[in-house]
Length: 338
Image 1 (cartoon, rainbow, N blue to C red):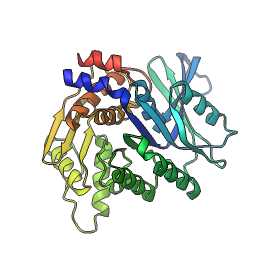
Image 2 (image 1 turned 120 degrees about the vertical axis):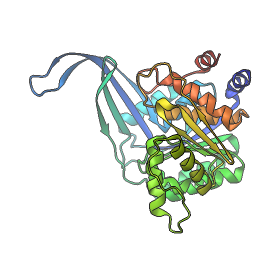
Image 3 (image 1 turned 30 degrees about the vertical axis):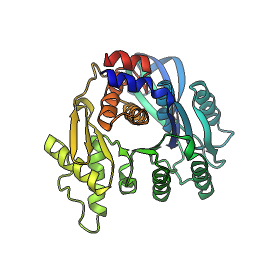
């Protein structure tokens, strides 16, 4: 435990670039007192609202909340979109550097509105454009990475499938980071799984891993991918799939999160199941962002991958006990580990 605490105390030294899709999350909070006479739906009497930068920005928020330097790289919508200005304002409040963010005038910033009554989410409304980002903006992003990679200890790729991270761009990012000798971790989208080759780690949840197995089998032209079961219900299923994905994608490590069953870390020649430490679960939204943030920070602080996974597991156990997309800080994390 003392070594884990020492690693956490060194989080503040890390500088992490987060590349990915940018989202503004809006939360409307209230209570339900009656059913609408217009339709069989609850009437939520709203009492307050708040905004939180989401998507890749939630990963940056996790990093900043833990005392490290987070720089965001991605694309927002046009400057006339109120969600764009709100995103910039809220990111600044959270200490997130948006120096790598570019703007597309023919796009709106993704806005996700969640209406919550008591502790229960009633509905979510999404406003977004998911068409591909123009090539010139992707070139700007690549140029920013090339020109600034030496300033960072690690790069996190957050793939939400909103049009930014195409297959070519993902491969180019991983190659650039690997050539620099830095850490590169990926929160994956299953239909891009074969693009994550040579990453330091990818961190899917169980469902994403199962979908990825189907995708890799479908696209494996040389019959080199040796996973035959697509479901990950048993320890044996998980162990075989994790070891094969690690080998097939030439990864340093593979960390699959399993909800109430904790997580499983795979490294070359070894694997370890890590049971959950969550005491109570209110909301799992954003837990994956916490896992990849803390795992990456711990690697930046010279942790082994197993130590990093244990710390990430403690952090996830904290955030699922909070309502809404939440983060933790060093004080909460140190207290939980003690």
